[in-house]
Amino acid sequence: MKKLLAALSLATLLAAPYIANATPQQDLEEFQNFYKERFPNTPFEDFVNGVYSIDAASREQWEDIEEFAPYELNISNGESLFNTPFANGKTYASCFENGGIGIRQNYPYFDTDRGEVITLELSINECREANGEKPLKWKRGPIADISAYMASTSTGNVFDIKIPDDPRALAAYERGKKHFYQKRGQLNMACADCHKFYSGNMVRADLLSPALGHLTHFPVYRSKWGGLGTTHRRYGGCNAQVRAKSFPAQGEEYRALEYFHTYMSNGLAVNGPGARK
Amino acid sequence: MASIKIRAKAKDGVTTVKALISHPMETGLRKNSKTGEKIPAHHVTEVTAEHNGKQVMNANWSGGISKNPYLSFKFKGAAAGDTIKISWVDNMGKGDSAEAQVK
Amino acid sequence: MNLLRRKLVKTAVFVGTTASLVGTGVLLPQRVLGAYATAAFEAKDVDGAISGSLGSGSVTASDSVKLKAPDIAENGAVVPVTVSSSMANVTAISIIAKSNASPLTSTYTLSAECEPFVSTRIKMAKTADVIAVIKADGKLYSATKEVKVTIGGCGG
Image (cartoon, rainbow over all chains, first blue to last red; front, side, top):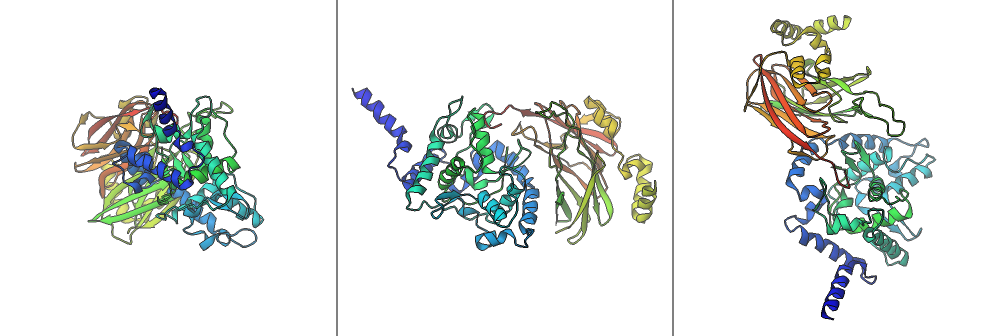
C-alpha cells in the first residue's frame, strides 16, 4: 500500500505540469525553476544561448561563428526589404507599433478582438495583404529576413508575454502547453522529453537544448539548413524528426505552441536572430 | 541584395578584415533529393582584397569552403578611413565587389 | 590580356612590387590576375594539394604554425578554422581537409603587408585531419589537427 501511495504521489509530482488548474504563472515558475535546478551554473540571462550556455566546447565554435555570423547578411537584406515601400507607397513601418522597431518581445500576443494568437510573421504577411501585396512563404526567405531585421532592432528587450483574462487566451495557452508535453510520432516523444526532462543530455552527437530561452533567438540561421528559418519551420522539422506529422506553419496549433513556448521564456531578452548548428 | 559584408578594424597598426559573402558554395557533389540529379558546382573560386587600390591578399577557394563563406585576414600599414575592397568571382563567371572604410 | 595591361599600368607601386616578386616565383603573373590553382584543387592526395598550391618541397611540422579548429565539429558543414604563425615572411597558406573529395579547401597568397593569419569556415564530410601548411621564406611548414565529425541525433 505504501509503495502504491508513493508511486501515485510520484506520478502526481511528475504529472504536475499536466494539472489543469495550475495557472500559467504557476506553470512558469515550475518551468523556470526546473532549469535553474538542472543547470545551477548557468546564469538565468544566459539561457538565451541554448546549448552554448551549458557546453564549453560547442560554445567556442559558436563564438567563432558569431565573430561574423552568416545571419548578418539576412539582417541587411531584411532591413532593405523592410524599408522598401509597397506598390501603394506605404511601408511595413505603417503596420507596426513604433514603426516596427524594437517590438519583437511583444510577440506572440493574444488578440482579444480577433480571438487568436498573433505572431510576428503573421503580422508581417497581414501587413503585406492589407497593402495589396502577396503574402510571403512562412518558413524561409524574405519573411525570415524581415523577421530577423525586426528581431535585431529589439536585442536586449525582455519578453513579458501576457495571457489576458479571457478563456480563449487561456485555451490557446493550454493548447500550446499540451502540444509541448504530449508524446507524438513513431518515436513517441514529446518536446518536453528532449528539451526539458533530458535537456543537457546527448542524443547521439547532439546536445539537447533547454526549452527555456528557445524563442528568444528566432529566426535562426542553422548550419544544417545553410540558411535562416522561422520558428514554425523549426517546429515542423522537430515534429518530423520524431516521425510525427507536422502542422501547417502559422496554423492554430503552432501559433498556440509558440504562445506557450514564448511565455515560458518571460524574463529573458530578445537575442535574435541566432546561429545554431 | 549586397552579397558582401565587410568589417575592417585597425588596432596597434594591424588591421583585421572580416568578410562575409552570400553564396551557395555548391561542391557539385550534392544530389537533388527529389530528382536524384547532381546539383552543378557553383562556388566562389577567388576572393581578392585590396587596400587603397593595392592588392594585399588573394584567396583561391574550392567548394570545400562553407556556404555563405567567411574570410578574415590581417595586414599592416592601413589607417582608419582607408578603403578596403573585397571582390569575388565564381566558377560560373559571376562576381561582385564591395568596399568598406577601415575603422 | 587588356585587363593585364590595364592592371599593371594602374599603379606604379603595384608594378614594382609585382616585378620584384615575379623574380622569386612567389607571385606569378597569372596569380596577379587570379588564375585558379585548378591542378591543386583536383589533387586527391595531400601531397598533390600542397605542391599544387604552394610548390614542391618538403613539409616540416612546426609548433610555429598554429591551427585552431574544433575537436568535435558541431556541424560538418561549418567548421571554423584559423591558421596563424609566429614565423616571418609568410607568403602563402593552404588549408587541407584530408578526407574531403578535394583535400585542398583553399589557398591564400599574402602580400608583404599581411600578418601570417587567415580564418575561414570549411566543410568536412567526415572525421579527418585538417592540415595547415604555410610557406615562409620559400620553405613549407605545417600543423595538423584531427577534427571529429559526428552524426547528429534528432536535431542534426
